[in-house]
Amino acid sequence: MPPLDAQIKSNRRRSRALFGMFFLIYGALGFAVSLRFGPAAFYIFCSVAIVIVVVTLTMGDDLAVTVAHAKQLQSREECPPVWDAVEVMSIAAGQPMPRVYVSPDPAPNAFAAGKDPKQAVVCVNQGLLDILDKEELEGVVAHEMAHVRNLDVKLMTYAAVLAGILAGLPAVRIRLVVFDTQVVDLTHLAHDPVEVLLTVQLGGGTDIGRAVQYCETLVSQPGRTIF
Image (cartoon, rainbow, N blue to C red):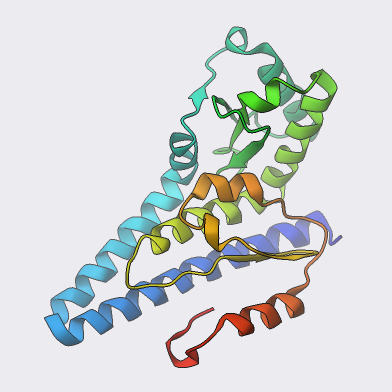
């Protein structure tokens, strides 16, 4: 596994590349529409893209917990096990304590979101609280905090939100493929940013060659494809 600093720098580069690709896709769509409806369509698409990027940068974490119907804990008394686990792991990692949420979702899962440790959130599903003891819960929270620290969560928050937005465009066919030590096609989850955050756990390797080979099999019209 690469050093922490290398992971952080890599995730920052990937985040910038992700937004660049998003602008490129929206710009291409705007140009195509402008051929029929005039230059104003292109400027409208570009303006919408800028608004989406600003919202994603500033509110991506809030969007994730809103979609999950999660409630923020304001004090330890509201849910001591989750609050204690996040507080202990934050101190151990030397990170600011993120905002803590609990979702009523019965699925045994948890996720983190946010652009950096200062803006991060950690959300635990009720289904997970029902089956884990104190030490197991701390282990799950520690795993999520690690993603916050090396900015994996930043990249995945942006990717999940932007993929969900693009998946909602009827004129665009989206294929969401993630890779690390394995290559997984999550196209069926592209419309749901929270489900993507819950499903994807990065860290451990980068099998980019196999990922590119898989993506090539999905391309039927190279001249109209961006990946």
